[in-house]
Figure 1 (spheres, rainbow, N blue to C red):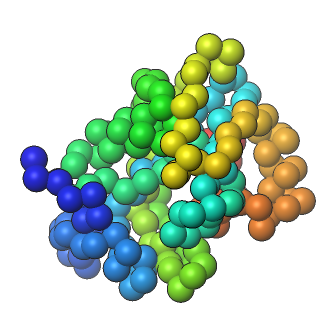
Figure 2 (figure 1 turned 135 degrees about the vertical axis):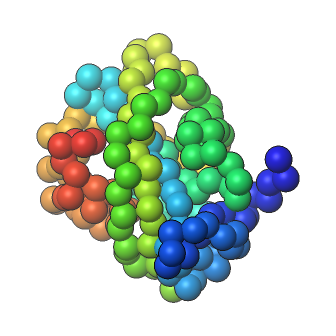
Length: 174
C-alpha cells in the first residue's frame, strides 16, 4: 500500500471517495473521513489534552483519540494505528456508530467529518500509557458525570467535536 500521511479520503457529493491533502480538507471545510476512539474502564473515560503544537485545538481536552485514515487505509486499521501512535497502547476496539458533524476548529480551519466511532475497554490500573508528546500533552481518566459537569462549567477547555459528541450522542459514549 502506498500511503502518504497527509493525504486523506474526502467524500464527493455522490458518496465516492477522493484523495485530498489533510490541511486543504480543513481549510476548505471538505467532507472527509475520520475516526474517534473512546476507551473506558467502567464509568471512567480516558481523555487526552491535545499537544499545544497541534495545528488546531492545541491544549484542549478531547476523547481518547481521534484522527483521519490515510488514503486507501482501512478505517479499522486507522483506529488501531492512531491509538498506538498517540497513546502507546493497544486495546480491542469495536465500532459503535457512524456520525457526521461540522464545526469551526479555529485558525481558519473547519471540520466536516463522517466519523466512525469506536469503543475500547481497558483496566486503568494496568494499562501503560506512553503518550507521544507531539500529539498529547496530558491524559486523565474521568467519570461520565464529572465530564458532563466540567464541559458545562468550562466548555472552552474542550474541542468542538468532543462537545458535540457529549451533546448529541450521550447514549453512545457518555
